[in-house]
Length: 207
Image 1 (tube, rainbow, N blue to C red):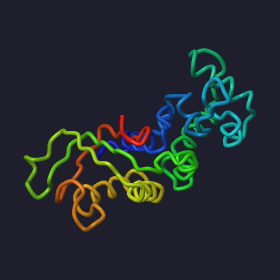
Image 2: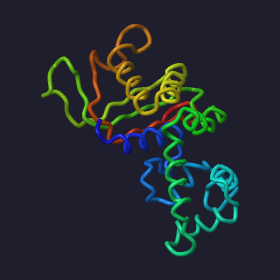
Image 3: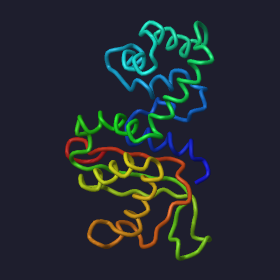
Image 4: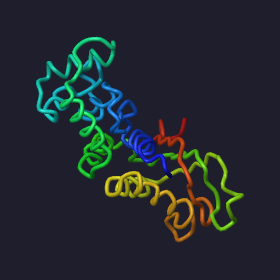
């Protein structure tokens, strides 16, 4: 999986639900970086927790408000070179550090979003490893996870980031589905993950 920054963002978005965050560390998406640093909020027009972002960056909330406006309109006050570097670094740390990932998952855990389990879909190059390279192809596989499996997945991600998630998915899909048997197919492997989707049941069932 060569596209590590892309996978980092896809896993972060899927598991935290914060799909507007830019955790690539490339410094290109001003609003996305602020979303990664501050996290979401229902109390602001931008949807970003501006107070948290300002505190993390050591600037005033008003400064962050101006940056958000610039990110939305393309005009206005832009961060200095020093602040731009700090923005990119802090945004990347939201997904590349254990503390950042724990903070990112806190909302999902507090809301008990997946208390009744979840459905996880992974699209990418994947297949039964033992069958050889010819069986690795672009496809989508999907599993329904019980609450214990969801928590194991979140723990694996919190501890090891996108590598931890990939290891957990490989183990769950192709090694141990919880009773010693693979949840999907024996020796299943992921060569790439181009999209990841996680949803909880609605009204006791799935959409």
